[in-house]
Image (tube, rainbow, N blue to C red):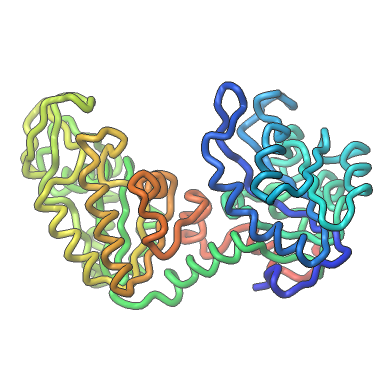
Length: 402
């Protein structure tokens, strides 16, 4: 795996694909700069070498070309601050004369931010001519955008072919890849995967892959009730995918044959309404009264899950245990987060991946107490499912394919 550490960028213009898809409020202020901060070490390494950085990213999902609310110009001031006052120029477009002139004028130690890649439909189409136009701006390509590495877009996968030798990963990408590979290919046993979230359908492929690797699979969130119902349980009006009941049974049967332990909740915190102030009771997960719904794992389940996690050496967590956005149904997610932190403190390797798991870890201020927090939920899951990603393959492949 080639990373920025293996190159000296003195006098080089590095074209870096970053993930600056950050949330903005109504007045275009950044409300969470996590992704921008993650990219800073890569940028600083290149500048320290005596190189310059041309940054390209998407922001949001613009449908009809340029739109004020999706312009990356809103990020320039904050980016300069994050880089310790380094001058950041802005190009009004990512290709064409505006971009080429700005890139041409760039001096060592300077940074140029290009306008939103997705203002051009060719970006998401993986258009080769568009990728070639982007490639003219720099003489080295660095992919540091793990959150979009599962997309075969022009700037994430196609562009790399125009840099047959001069391409590598930044620190975000290399850290993500190393962490996923450690979990998938070098996991110290016992390996426990914790899967939460609403739907079994979203997790079927990943569960099938994890059964080849994991010793224990812990199920939580809304998807748990599809498993409970498949096994004959009464789940009231809990979230369920009736069309996925056969899938749930097949997963349980495959786990039994593979010797993988699958843990399903034994109790749930139930509510008579989907609201934080709803009436609540703790129910056996197989005997939820009519008109009630499970919105979190119960105390007995928390205890079982904490014990499994405590005895694990490798932990992957994707998805909350309940509706953790509502304080009265957040206890299960918080309990699992703290169990992971405790296991990590005793030497386990813990990888937190997926938007809601990351949100939970951040909500409880525990990000620095786990081994690695992934910046790309969708990319992480696809990497586990497929074993690679288009953006990873493009950089690892040293041949010119056109």
